[in-house]
Image (cartoon, rainbow, N blue to C red; front, side, top):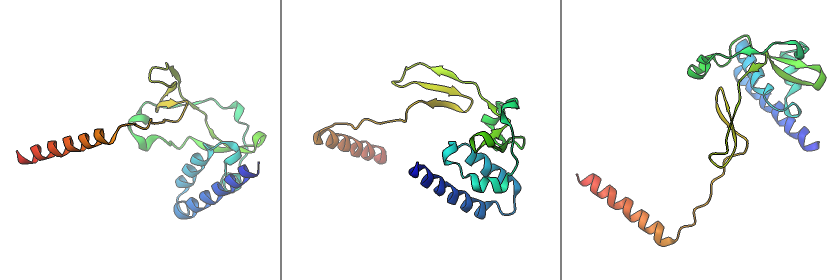
Length: 158
């Protein structure tokens, strides 16, 4: 719990820094910062800073999800339309994006070694990517370097 409070405090500082640097004169920048920090888990959200900008309370259980157009995946400037706002939720002392974004999710089989979910914005993995460290001998790396050098020499000599 102490660690969570420290992380939340760092997000408060980050929010204040972004707000000071980018949001002083532009209300839409404030809204976009609110949306960005509303995505964080409730225990890490900079609620003090967000409450100063968005003081309204809302009962979020009543809102219908907003439709997300496929055009949003093609034109990224439309990803944050003005109808989406960060709203404070009293019940869990955090912010939520309203209207709720209704994204379809389709499970993807474990075809590539890990399961994922297909969303409107592309696949979302259930685990972070990890890379296996190749275990090659010095002779193999030497041959790869030699073949690269030979390929470059041939290419540049033509």
